[in-house]
Image (cartoon, rainbow, N blue to C red):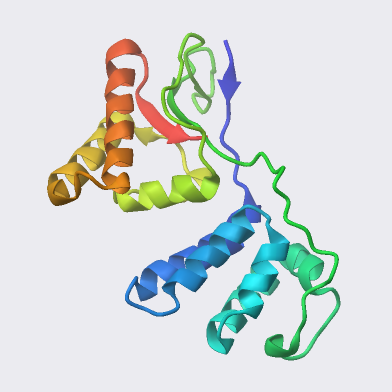
Length: 212
């Protein structure tokens, strides 16, 4: 039997902060896309592209993103801007930055249940025979999906989601967005809804689901 324990990962704090702020200001804001792309590039550790994206942006959103990275992820900020101090708007990115496209960070949608052999009752496990029908996603994509269906996107820090709650959330989204049935977003929700239903049918021991 294989076991999996969830652990908090603080390395994505800056990504979550920027992403949340983008959601707060909404898609109607001219800065929404800038923040979303910044969060995505930071999440993928594509620092060269991120630095160029920041440098090409307007002063206010540029300084906000730099401030968040400096505060929430100082190691990455130092990689990007070295030991420069003073006004963020005057800082120039380091010339040796690269896009780390080999990072294997990401998440797979999986079904879980409490390990009956664990006396503490705190460990989650999953069936040895379980196969998955959904694609491996970046952490950023997984958070975007959970937010879309109205669930807490911070899956790295949360315990698994009750299976029935997840199915209810995907069902509600599909019912409320029938007009968008031909969209990629709707298709993605439907895919995970069907996968969760499959877990329920083929692996009756599964009680919860999560990206991990």
